[in-house]
Length: 133
Image: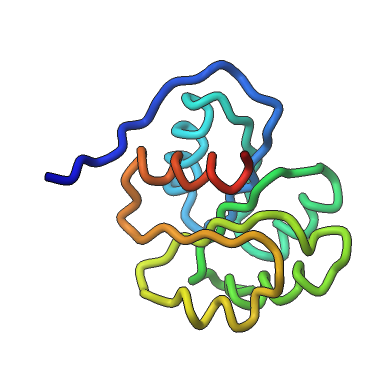
């Protein structure tokens, strides 16, 4: 019998996660989950806003939705992987599609992880910890 990882509360950490999703409710959900686990977070509605936030604040991981207006997750990944200052930031891609192999084709050498929607809290936190350990 396989068990689902449960979210764990933790002591505060200095690690900051940038949450990029066009739905405010999803950003809120992920921010609360990360905060309860001891992480700090900032958020962006789309890839353009995320690029602005990256220029203003250092982040340790980007939690990225693939389907967004204005700039898709794919376009965002291509842009940051082409920018030396952001190319090695770990990415955790949240998607409802099985696109792992496709994303690996254009994501470059930076750390990369995936979580399928609907995201189970313990699974998400486990992936976050693994990428920024």
